Length: 223
Length: 88
Image (cartoon, rainbow over all chains, first blue to last red; front, side, top):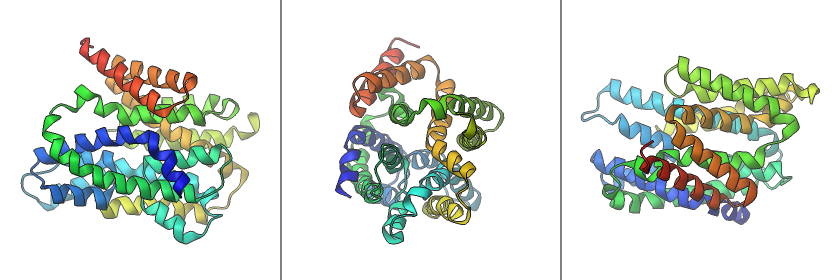
């Protein structure tokens, strides 16, 4: 558990900047500090919170709420694939802690956990600890984020919009296996890019990831 | 929002508990984390442009040579900010 928290430390600067961006967005939409903190605590999925706030209406109609829920689900559908990819590893551990870890599954503990496992680690506590630690950090970071948020009027100036892709890039370096991924990654990239051009929304993550994953299945004997 | 998010978190895990782990499924799942990352980063960077690609190149290079996540994120963010300041 502690090891999981320790492996998350490199992610903290990115999380704190992201929380500041989210605080700015929530302050701009008129959410109170307790409302913003409650949202971070309950949803705990930064990218979808930021997008939901961009759709935040002045008055709530059923259609507006439905739009926010649909967007949340589309953006977070990658968690479904992440949970699936962790299953062979986590199913060997006690299911109570595993479900606790799954409840706080996000990019952070997925990436820390899958890199730990790819390097031969077996302790599922790393995944659970990373998730709980980042959940607490994220909820707490919403407070200064909300208070300081008005300073950060343009998230682009601090490259906040690039924190997720850059964190992912750094993590990808550790996951890359030449024999397995030299064909799979280009296939995923091309399919995701094509999907991004053809379908609006965030489906490209799902399309590219499934294409890459299927390709790995079909090409498994050719490595 | 919270319910929708928890639903997708548990659904993937539950689905895989129903699917037998054949060699095909095993190979597909092993490649999935990387495929998710590539499918997220590449379209977002294509949408953004040269600033994003310079940031990604800086982050990847930092990761390969320095092997520190913080350095990778710092250099990546710095590259993006610098490129944007130059007006790209």
